[in-house]
Length: 377
Picture 1 (tube, rainbow, N blue to C red):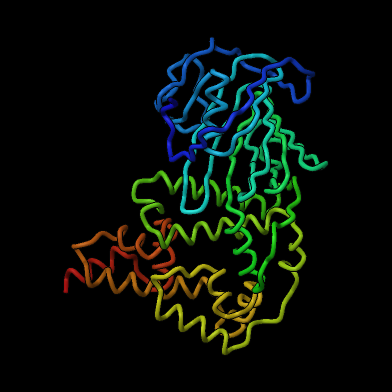
Picture 2 (picture 1 turned 120 degrees about the vertical axis):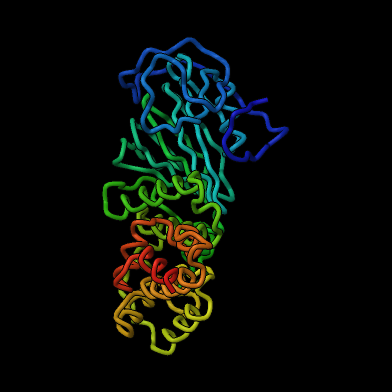
């Protein structure tokens, strides 16, 4: 029984997986630190070895040197697969994962020249963002090579694939339900998307969109573990997941990219009014750009252009304006009985510094000053 995992697992009992260790060529070889002797799975505590801690790894990261244990952990969380070691050395396996409502975000490395042979994911796309080291991915005759902070890969659900890791590689490995990705794209385009999206295998992480995707993944991951973070507020979590999906569809080239980026006619004013009425009447609901575009019956881009022409601001700026009004009302009504942080987070403002800046811009005073005035009567 494997213990020490952070997050839920998707147990897949009765599935046989092959574990193969063999020597191979020097593909993806890189300088490798000395490896400690193999050991059993460690608990969710900081590594007590004499090696310097990796600043990119969380202190509760799961670690093991055991080949079969590393295989079984990834098989239980992601999918049954075949794991190969090309250098025959013990692994230095590091893994931590978190779940949001729809996404699973893992951070892992094998610490060896390792290769995974993975069957079709079927119901999921798989995103790898290489943070350190190198990897090589092949799928259906396509090949992509990634290096740290430069390239990532997006794996389609309907073909087997292989991933080979350099010993120093660390990656975010994100599991995205096919239905969620395709429905989100459909809302952005304002039409149904049928069947799997044909994503490019490799993509550039150094572009503005690529950096935005990395930042969105990191922010979601940090919020899922922060006490009082987004995980405790379903409204904010849905918005953040929607943002991640939008960044994904902008960063990774796919068969709908041209349509998604093509200039469109602005939404008509009666459609803009429908959006404004929804925001005014239901500011506590899921008001992602994708949902607002669906309400207007237009693409997200068409809504943004039309909304700015009609109001002078973007749809999401209007959502923020209305929610700040609700925050102000509660600060005055509940002064001294509920904290500013609780009220702000309840209304979807997760970054308190940014919230304070928006609040001051809108009202000419800080939230604290509002509370003090309310307490003075």
